[in-house]
Length: 227
Image 1 (tube, helix red, strand yellow):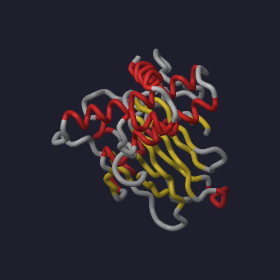
Image 2 (image 1 turned 180 degrees about the horizontal axis):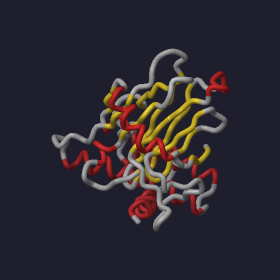
Image 3 (image 1 turned 90 degrees about the vertical axis):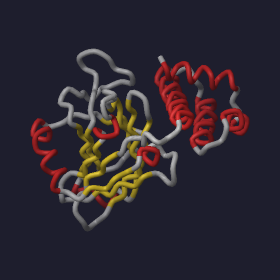
Image 4 (image 1 turned 120 degrees about the vertical axis):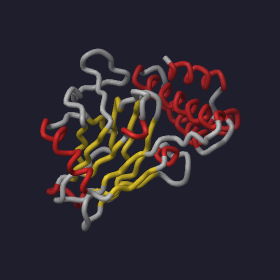
């Protein structure tokens, strides 16, 4: 995976909202964007026709949640920029201070000269409290759409919201452990499988047992994700 900056050209801040208003809008439910309801959400991208916009503003609502990190698969001809001119190329996880990335819109563009190298790639978006997953799909014909991430409905039960938050804390803890270099490659592989099982809806104890990790480790990951 390569870490992308959300470095943005100044004109995008002003032009992108106009593009978004004139483009068809596709709504992606919150849980689908988290990868917890159905297959991973798919986002179509097109060469030679401008930017595809992913809008998190409605999903974030009044919580002040922001995008902190974006990753893509290696060796693909996609550029990702954002609505935050302050974002920098060497952004690290959990940045703070004046250089912290705090975006709520992503602009995705395909390199016109390398479209044959891309068919599908995974886009991962890390925010203050969540990990969003998307599959970017190359379409040779068509026009860019706007993708709007919908907020979690207020009708969802508190237990379901807590479960989603708990999984996200575990993902954040996993990312922190990787960033700090405190887990081996083999252990990171087992943790990844545990998170896949947990996100699929298995009980944490069952997911841990199948992946071969201890509940003590699960608690440590959760603690890391909440700090």
